[in-house]
Length: 325
Image (cartoon, rainbow, N blue to C red; front, top):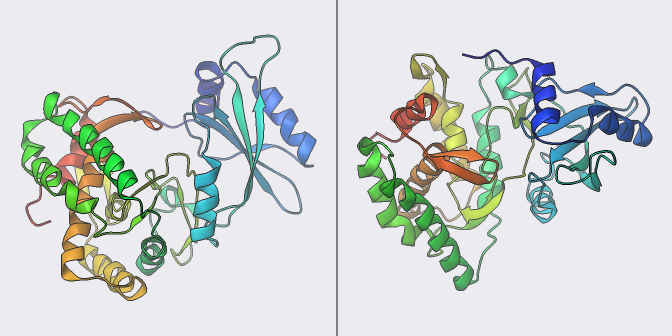
């Protein structure tokens, strides 16, 4: 297992993702706010993120040329989750005048949200009611009403998942995958609301209060899209346990955590029938295959997972082999 190193990760971004120099980015930050430029402790592979400012600290993120954020999606996220999504300004791009050509970076300035990335506070259980309220906010904000758009989205998702049938994707997962494909038309029929789906709601992008476990912020909406409710529930699965070199382990109080989540969700959401509960489980499984069945490069699929992809296989074994979904 490789050891994360902050400076190596930053150097890798400026070596492989852009010809813009780190100094150029830091100088831009100092042209906007006073104070020291401090890189955040957890850097993404396709961006360089820093904090700066004394009275009201700001986050500045420099994203690779092909990893820009859809600002309409971000504004929508801010409207739906006003307390959990930072206000963001897009400042355009920076290029390197001495090395013109592809490789510029996109510049985003954001308010600094409180809290700590969940991956840095795994000894604190994430607060299930807090997470449930986040998902309930999505449920109550239906985004699609045009049948033609829904049909196009169904075709896209179906085509993507069917790639797994024509690849070296391990055969043991196919029974559940085929069940998902069979039920996809129901998911996109309007029986479930079409919601803003984060699509990368992992332990690095969920901020929590380290004292209470309550969610204080959701960051990095670059991969957000509109999908039937439930496609992002793989994130909820991830806070019920942890992965190590021996595979996936649920926490001892997993059932208690699940009950707390769903009881709050049923209370905060509305119009949840038994048939919709069944479809939510289908959407959850579809999201798990979407997440772990492919090797992703941002919003783009590099390839389908194979038996040699140990990390993805461990998650698929944990979540996509079950019969009781």
